[in-house]
Image 1 (cartoon, helix red, strand yellow):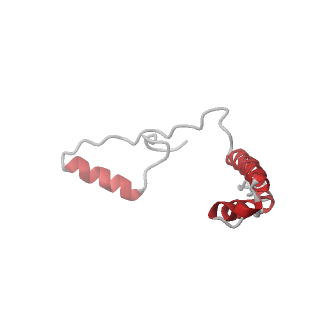
Image 2 (cartoon, rainbow, N blue to C red):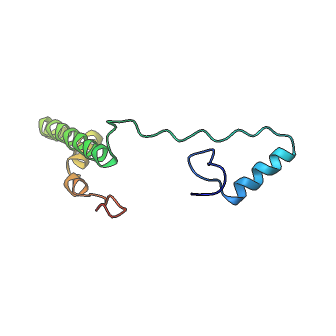
Length: 108
């Protein structure tokens, strides 16, 4: 069993925070505790799931631009639009898609 009060926020205050709170009380400034941290809503996608969805969108859009580039007449391939479409079609998104960050805290 621990001795002392329960923390007012989600975690115990540091020494500097306690000192600042004490000085504020001495100065007569009303002190409000920090609001508790909101938990992640249930069913919210993980970072990895959001990363995978973003990569899937990029790959789909790159395919649309590649189709646009294929439909572009040869006379327009050297225009700024044609060069931009070629640069997008040349992107290597498969390398980016293969990146998986470790989950950390021993859950790798």
